[in-house]
Image (cartoon, rainbow, N blue to C red; front, side, top):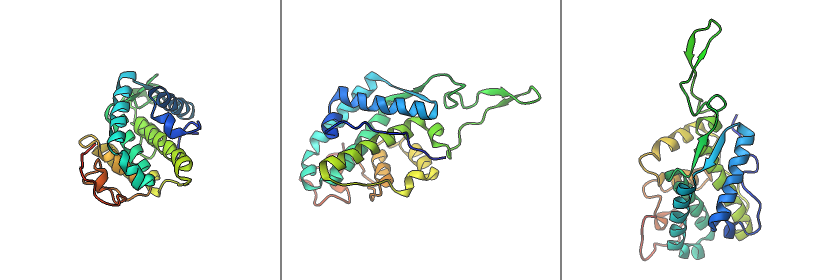
Length: 222
């Protein structure tokens, strides 16, 4: 059954200001990890070094594209959290840990005994069970969705919900496969999950987003 982590984002005041601070952003992500573990029985922990690298890569991208916020704040925040998702995934900012018996992702081919006492290979999680099939991607996506929804309520007085694509295992399979070779596609998939037309060819270029009102004077892939 497709379920989002319960309370997949913290409810601090001024979420946008909070998430741009290293320590507070980590606290927000840690709560999401804790809630995911409580719901799904999968322990996910933050890698401090990799998280820091992802965070500052994200901050750099925000600074470079800050003028877009004045032109289209709704799409700026959408893009910003898509970039955060990209950087967290690319830098492997979180990882699954814990007991392999409780966590089949760690040992998808671990053998077990059947009723006759013969060893048989345990089946890896099905994409239909996204929480166990790709815990890292699933949790980070919901973390970014939760923060985006909170930010848009506070900064733009907008309320939104994800699209049907978020519940489609085939889309998640494509997401997981394609970001291996092109990490920036995480931005495009995040757009798709939120019902925004993705820029599949150059998702890291804010100037080429469908929501961009006009081309920027200078462009750089972030």
